Length: 151
Image (cartoon, rainbow, N blue to C red; front, side):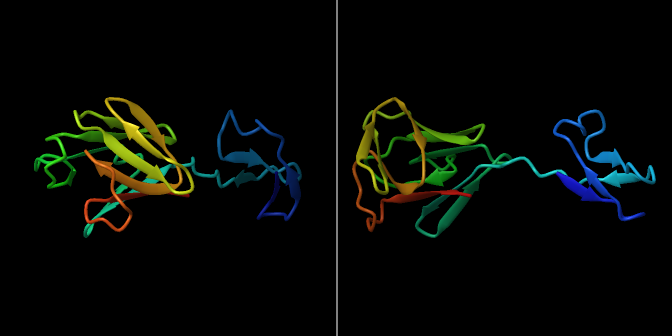
């Protein structure tokens, strides 16, 4: 990486790992002035869930979302096929893992791929698609929960 000194204008080549002792700072090799280096922010995975008029964005600050029939869930799905607490999505690092907790299963259709029926199992969400609690749903169904991994 190359950084220019604001004081003298010198071109400073930064070797990988050089900023480990004092992250974000180096000394100019010409004038010895301290140069602040903007460090890139860590990648933050984000997932958007949409159900009716409700939109939930999952990220590092909101790492867990529950779905089910009762009001204590983050996403309430009033459907006879949905269990009280039907499924949970957890942000595990940079993956969003959906876990089915129900008796009827959770049905996932990832766009461009086949549908998956989960029964008390986990699935790593990718791309975008739809989720059905307790039964398979079409993308235009009022029972469909849409998901999108945001970049």
